[in-house]
Length: 232
Image (cartoon, rainbow, N blue to C red; front, side, top):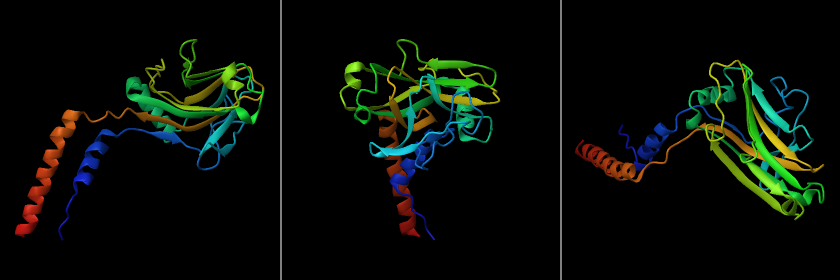
């Protein structure tokens, strides 16, 4: 029995070789908060849970700004947990790992309740007491002003930065890793919907030279394989 490998399959294999590494994604499609809970809580979410709701064409985690600043987090001390594995890997290569999330704000849901400013950021905490946040005056991920919040409009986007770009320097060999979301503002009903919270290795785009060199080689492999099959 002969097996013929297509060009697309070979190309996929080459790209897959670049994509190895620990990855965790929280997309909330399971209908729950996937372990997120109150700030500085025990693993498993502590005493607070968040609704997963369908909004903006996706299932997202709903987080109300209640004045805690660190509004939601997920912590794990399980070395087999995907978040633990991804953050442990990032602790050895902050420039090579991305922290990404989608955010969504619909100011029409509570007219007048979103205040005069709304800011979003992230924080991390580890077993040896290390804490850092991407929320200095010039480094916050998102900031909406009073005019935007009073507009009744929808605002959304994606934040994607390496741990290094966020100013995070995770210590290695930790007993737990905590990943958290910051919401800061003055609106009593300000709510942010989060989706696709992801920690993953940076996957370099294949260069033009790589593509130019690879495609002829793949065609040559296919031609030789086809010639062998024809002669057999």
